[in-house]
Length: 250
Image (cartoon, rainbow, N blue to C red; front, side):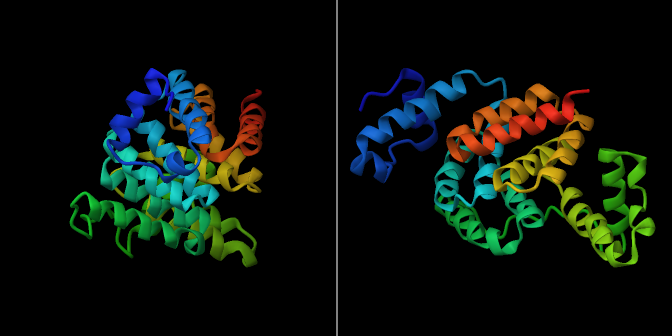
């Protein structure tokens, strides 16, 4: 097939001699898609390769792209993403997508891990206990979003107090405090989960600001969206760019 030099180099590095079934049944499509996704798009990337691949995995989780996730997980591991980093991306997705959508990704992930000889389960990455998760989760919220988050559930209406506390002890205490990924990476993948699933504009705006506060600047967020266009498509990518513009216009 007629691949650009950059696309051909990536195919060999990421997939080796593995053959994509689409390349056999639909070679014309596979040729122009490959040149775009693996050649043209990454040629303009300012992201490091690890970050780029972690974000691709996150948008595939967000959009429910389970089969493509399996393929791109193999590529990500070949291109420097560690198994622990990939696993944390799947784990954190449960907080933003729900286990109903994330469970199939566990099967795909563990299938890939076993195929490269990893012994399961991987080492634990948790850093909190049932007694500390609320306090540590709230600390993470404060570090990312500021002092206004300190024990913010205490001032919530009675019928919202539980979910506000769960955001602290579960979403942040159980997930954000884990090892393998830092706050900058966790906010980036959260951004990806939110814009890839769509319909989460208030939360997306909040986490764009969260990204800015932990050092992921506007250009980084734009680059993430651009690099993930082949995996999420144009409509939600354009929506994400508009959300970035709105959140950073001041």
